[in-house]
Image (tube, rainbow, N blue to C red; front, side, top):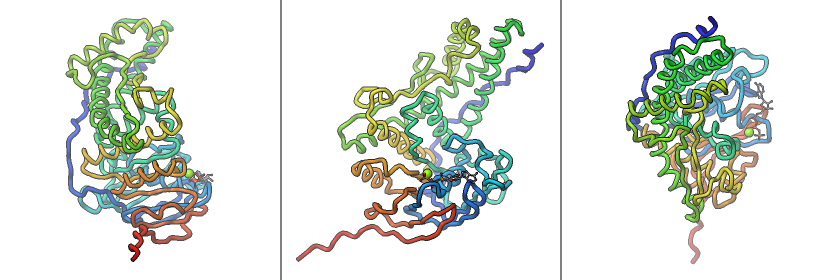
Length: 409
Ligand code: ATP
Ligand code: MG
């Protein structure tokens, strides 16, 4: 019968490891060398970045975002752009590679990622590793104009933010998410089959409900616990960005009501299981699972008002930045390491006060900033500036912070 396509529900319950504070050593992750080959419009590029600020500037469509994207992929996560894997390799080429030497986990390490035929292969310190293993070894956080969708668009953007952020500090979470998505897919297929009378309603659905409840509990619990760390940082950062004028808050919005984050495993799983039972009629009618972590959201408010619906452009932008900055702080707290920060094209969109706050708030760690104009970084830290043209670095210059003028007589 067709429903056997759905196979046997997997043994669920590969729980998420607790968030442990596991500082292995050094506090800042610093890239000392980066090479990119046949990635997007970049044929071959190497740079030895400054441990401070690196400004990559150039006209539109020269490869600034591509370079940042290449660097970000070393985290083992998917690109921050909506893109197909095969689009990452330079037109006409078969293979792309991104490699970096970096100081991380208290020692010098080498990471390399090769892309070919829509697949990725990674190595860490010359040994082949699963790509997912890079997550938790190489930390980077990216801000880009597309990041605004995090606040403005539908809940899937915010779930993706949460899931990506959690994966960086709890690499096993990716696995739990993948298991959950698989179970969800199977459950939905079965719902459809029962609906179309291609499969009997003989109890198999309940077996899937068990797996789904177990994995959902792990995911909701991890998200809530992560938020309890993220929220205080977010509140503090937003206060800074708004010059103390506005108060920011956030909360998990579950599709299944409950004291998530506090409820114990068994009780939580039961709660989900019985909610699924009650929603079965709807689920069968719709041919999909109408409750669960894939329907949850993250609520964001400024001064008690929902930012998504009522926030001004500037407030929405500030919220998106706040979430990303708070994510850095959590990584720093949990992994003991300051991630590399990638700011793609965001500075030009901010007013001077917010921009200054952002740049001074990022006084620690290695920074990569892309922009069209190279002006406006006079007051910043030590660093390098690179001009990029047609996927190649064509010039570089050192950057030093402006010295305060000597006091007059
Ligand atoms: P902007 O200032 O507009 O943001 P940018 O410098 O960030 O520009 P990128 O997005 O990095 O520009 O690069 C865009 C260029 O890369 C485009 O011209 C695009 O055609 C090219 N490109 C994208 N993918 C590939 C690919 N697989 N092979 C070759 N070129 C590509
Ligand atoms: Mg760009």
